[in-house]
Amino acid sequence: MSLLEKLDDPEGLSSFSPAELAGLAQEIRSLIVEVVGKNGGHLSSNLGVVELSIALHRVFSSPQDAIVWDVGHQSYTHKILTGRADRFYSLRQKGGISGFPRRFESPHDAFDTGHASTSISAALGILEAKRRSGSHGKAIAVIGDGALTGGMAHEALSHAGHLGRDLIIILNDNKMSISPNVGAFSRYLSSLTTTRRYQRFRSSVDQAILSIPRFGSRFLSWVVKMKKMVKAAFFRTNFFSELGFEYAGPIDGHNLPMLIDVLSKVKCLDRPTVVHVLTRKGKGYNLAEDNPTAYHGVSPIVLRDGKLESKPAQSFTDAFSDALMAAAARDPSVVAVTAAMAKGTGLSPFQAAYPERFYDVGIAEQHAVTFAAGMASGGLKPVVAIYSTFIQRAYDQVVHDIALQGLPVVICLDRAGPVPDDGETHQGLYDISFFRPIPNLSILAPASAKEVSLMLDWALASASPVIIRYPKCAVPRELPAYASLMEIGRGIWVRPQSGNLGLIVLSMGGLVPLAEEALDELARQGILADHYHLRFLKPLDEAYLTKILSGYSAALILEEGVAMGGVGQSIQALVSQSCPALRVQMLAFPDSVQAHMSRDDLLSSVGLSPAGIAAAATSLLSSQRRFGLVKEGGA
Image (cartoon, rainbow, N blue to C red; front, side):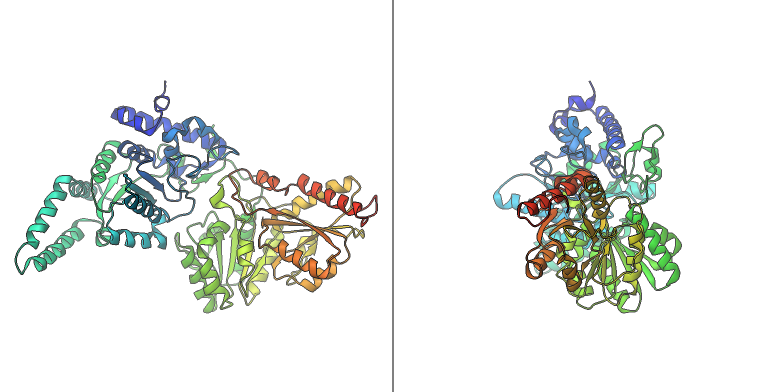
């Protein structure tokens, strides 16, 4: 029987010997590599926190003690230890367990996470709720050094220090390195300050000093200053202590006995504490250790040699990268900004070619957007590349700092629309709805690599802000129509008009090739329909669109986002005023949470597959015939 099979729940870790805990870590690493190799997922980050996760569950009692994982993409070991080892093979699969913490999935998942820098705020709130309700238990926030660059984390640190509650923050530092001597001495001091004996001694001394008549408070203030001077001389930083935290570390995040010892002492403290843990991304898997960035979030791996599979086709991200490189070569005022996602957004080639024109601001989307606004006000042409789900974090900055001033910033939203595998927190379904009402802002959706290039060039030449949104998928084959020149507010006919004015399909972006497949199938059935690709989601040339639609008896609108507040609803409102006889149907996402599954499954779930589009078109035409609006035998 394996060690994992002996473990029913995390409480069982208390009976494991040190040797068994080490063996358990090896079993968990092997399981993670095997499952991620088949399903894809986050590899480097999870391999780096195996021992830390085991130590946390050995010392603390989940779910009474709430563990909040910042970002959440490093929670695989946590899931394995909390009763989900037998279901771990379903990771990120439709109907399986999520790649991120989910409260509905297990009581051990204290808080849903998928974006960075939220854990300290959430854990502090959980701790305060425990205090006010009289519940017992600790709250532990596990945050990486990258996520700590986010402004929200610093806001939470400030508030936590002010409240003085016994919040525990695990700083998972997988980038810093320190010399052995400094590390050993720092660990010694950290261990000393987290013992009960030291805390009682410190409290007694402070009280004794305060009791000195007349001079007590002033003398204590001097002693505190001297302690800070001593800490500054020996510790790497006194940032946390300045905010009111006890500080333990740095300690080796792969040394289980040391982790368990320090965490056991920290558990007894009655004040906020930061435990600084040094880990190595990809630990135990050589390829991931050597190149943790490449093995951060991976598609299924060829386990035979551990190499990443080559990409089968050019993606929209690749097309954006190529278009930006071409634009930058022509115009030295073009600069690029990312929020710690250079590789994911396709900016790595730009970074290599134009390092002085590339800015990675860390996990700080708000700053990225306003920084770009400042550069635009000074005459540069900034291109900000951010995932659609992460632009939510900078909504006010887009409105207040870019749109209201009409500054010519180009925002390229990768992973727009349905996003596969990562689930609710990563869906890019909302940007159309929340950006369309904002003044001075244009929104474009390319359907091919050629259109990505045309739209980027158009946006860089614009005197006002532009958003270009594109999905996480391969670009389709080019069609002659995609090379058509840009006309503001207008789209293009994807195929030559049939002359049959029964049905028109209006699509956008990543849905255009799916609509084409559907219309090809309808044509094989003898049903003809015309296909208009919007290109512009805002503004719409309403007079031109009304002229087009007025000749048809039915229209099917395909939206790569939520229906509520989207461009489809605007077209429906336009039709009700200008073309009341036109029957309209829309396929889009409802205002409900979309779980983790493949992009194809997500689209199919709302009828946005080729088969679903063809079925909707056939149904719409059938209803038209019932009303006598379409002649039999044609569309």
